[in-house]
Image 1 (tube, rainbow, N blue to C red):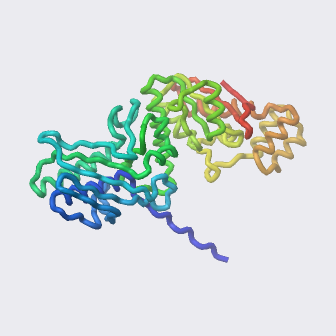
Image 2 (image 1 turned 180 degrees about the vertical axis):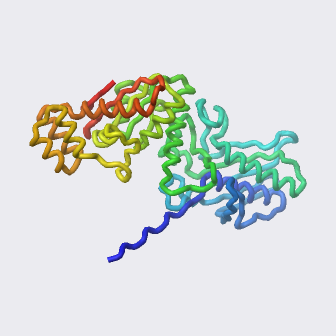
Image 3 (image 1 turned 90 degrees about the vertical axis):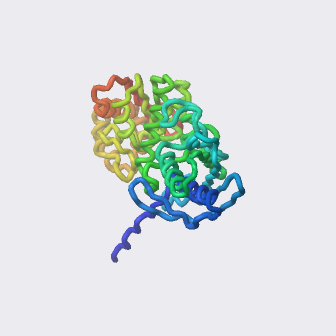
Length: 361
């Protein structure tokens, strides 16, 4: 039987692209009295998508337009969020001013591309909106003193599902995007968040960061060191992305914490710990048990095991320090990736109950 070909995942639009489209529609209406619908913008790489307006309103002093964000097939927390731009003319000579409306956060910590005290509207979306304003005011021969207020419905609530609170972005979401396009299940977006977390920790004087594969291991290391949230890096499966960034942007110490299965992959030499891109080798674990003094029978049972946790449980039952061996080998992989960067490396292996079963430093 032939297998049905996999359907291509649908791309979507960033919050920055939606805010830019809403700005174009609102400013055009403020000047002409008419809202363009659909509204077309030009993205940084030249694409020209059209956006339907979900809401529009104006009076003599201001105009606002809203776009419903479509993130395509990406599991984006802002999918279907209502993004609104409200524009008005400012005082002569004031230029283009960005403000955070309801649901858009304010930056409170250094280390991000936007300075503390500014609305969390990233540089590329600011540039896109600036270019839209400059184009429109030139066309209609009006001053470019324009105030742009971006808001996101329920943005403060949605932001609790993002990295924003630990990065010091308070009160709502960030307006993001470098290309205007959301690529489904983007690894680059997660790695970018890892980089931002490291930048914030460094900028705020923290020389120890902890990178965890999940919430259980993060809770363990947070309790162990009493680290603030902004020093906790949600590494997920991207050990390589985290370590390579630290190689160029070092801190004094990094603690890597994770479950036995994930860190076994790191111990084997993998830097991407996702189940679809790396696998636990039971032959490797059997060899590790041999090094730890495990009997030939245990080694054979390991080779036919179903899960890494099954092997760990068996090793613990026989008093074999398998998790410690994994921690030490994982630390060697991390140090090899960091090359000569002056960083102290610690690896902590966590069991499913949140207990520390291996630790190398």
